[in-house]
Image (cartoon, rainbow, N blue to C red; front, side, top):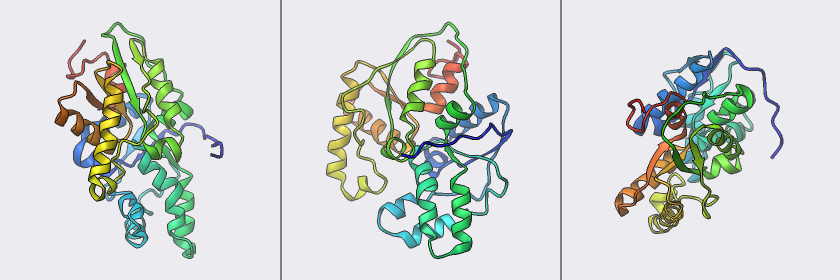
Length: 261
């Protein structure tokens, strides 16, 4: 992966909230906004945004993915960074949106320009904002980290999640043997190949639980939904939490239920 040149911090940023966060974990999106505002940024949320198009694209339907992307190319007109609290969606927008419009000089130019402004949330927090969270007396937590396939392999953002977790006072990050493996979600993969997906998440869950940790954190909501559903279905003692919410909670001394520790 080509090393990325990071810009100076901008006082204004866009947030691309992702459809999964919008529909299933809106609090994670709000916590992402809070984390950015904590650093003095003004966060803009274009209301016309929707899906990044990845489900259609990964299912072999580029025309549908192109239509979804095209409807959003003009939603981010200012030269501000676009922060995405999902590595898989960020990877789609940064690496695949430009290829969707090959042969269309106008849309292609817009997609290429926009792709250079796409940043996954933890990447922007670490590499551009250089965040530091206060040390405060609070409950100790041992957690496992899950990084989605897109975040790990397309955006290279596992390192940012590791840095953030390891910088938090009172938090111990525990690695597990299947950390680098897919959880089985894979967008429409879990629908088309339910048996295989179920076996994959079962292995992932068993590996995470073997650490003795009670919490798994990730910056990708699709994976969290998959792992969390599997944990609930199997009665496993593992809670899942979006990394944005975990960071906001720990930075403010809040308990898992939102109250003060």
